[in-house]
Image (cartoon, rainbow, N blue to C red; front, side, top):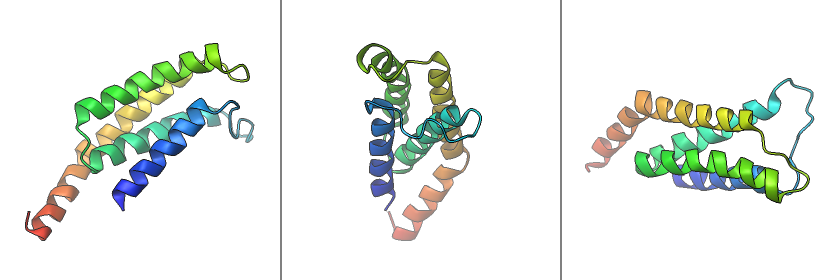
Length: 118
């Protein structure tokens, strides 16, 4: 179940970052775009760690994707624009997701393994 959630979160993230047009750009909430960036990167980071993706690889790839996606938006997607503040929101999201995992997720996962006898 967690793996399916991780895959789904990755697909949503990739669509949101690389779609030719920005989805839901005008929802009437100030800074909604930045909040969405933070949340989707936090969810992917947390779920990736939850399913066992090595932190070094996952967090490094997410950080790279934060920068690369904005460069691609700026130079390759004519209806999108790269925004350095989106990169900051993405990186903050990665940090939040990792913090949530390291704070509480590891003990949950360890308990599940103990219950399964592994």
